[in-house]
Image 1 (cartoon, rainbow, N blue to C red):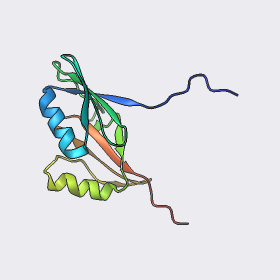
Image 2: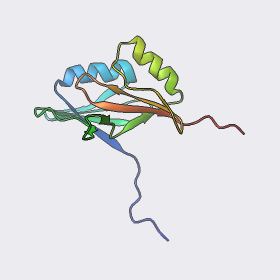
Image 3: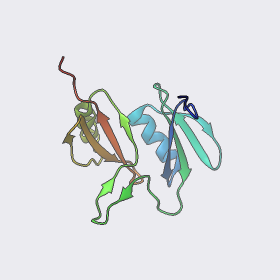
Length: 128
């Protein structure tokens, strides 16, 4: 059975209120560099090839969704080798983080300067 469409990669769109602030912040903490810039959006990539797009946010939108009880749920996340190390880094840099989880790997979510709630996750260590 063949595949209908072959997907090559993915990207995420992040609503931001200030392009330069977002470029500086994601560049400093995650190594993203601007690849395309125009008045409507900015595209950034990191060394791993992860692509993010910033769209001007004039409506206070976020990239996550909210449960009826008010808790946030990330719509996307970044995979890392060591979520514990990433969590400590975020705490040292005074990046607002959520709860650290040890369930089917290790994970937590952080808030960017615009309040987007984004997950960081590392797979469980295999014990062969």
